[in-house]
Length: 232
Image (cartoon, rainbow, N blue to C red; front, side):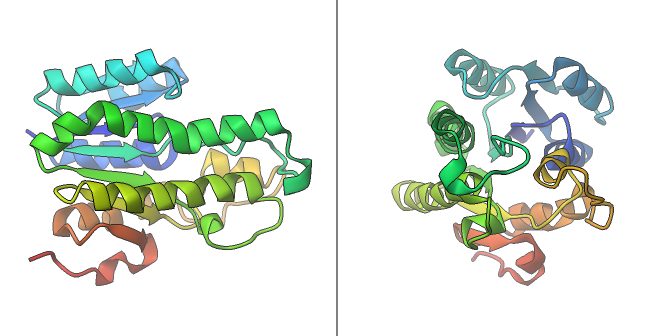
């Protein structure tokens, strides 16, 4: 039985991907800070054998609990670092971003994902697993007011490349899912109508295809994943 650890699994893309993997027979270990929302999301998952652990991914004890839960299920085959924060809403100019807020953005979006990789690395190595880090077009494009979030995702992109070089037995992906109708995207545009953005579930088939085909480690755009080559 394959095991996936997904952060930010109570809503948005994390919730949609957890449901899709569970439908394919995966066991899912998921986390989120909102215990009620996480419980509701996991109550709707098909099959059994899933573990919902509410907590903050920046908490070392919480990360250890996630790793322990995956180990009890047989070991993690996949880690999806989906949990992210904008830091502030509305987004300020980069020069106006409070340093403390920026530190929190980096802690959630860069440090915590890499720390969770470290916790799960023995399991992932043993199962020739994969790491899927959710990126953003803001990591490569210079959008005004997106300096804090964008630079954190740029750091995560580069960390993914380094991890791939250091762990050639693993598949390490940084994936830009594109604009989606999520709470985070709404927070980036407070008061605006984002109903024209596609739902997170629309991106899931592309991510599943990435995991099935197993192309080389690297950075991918979800919009391009229909064209990825199957690894030999």
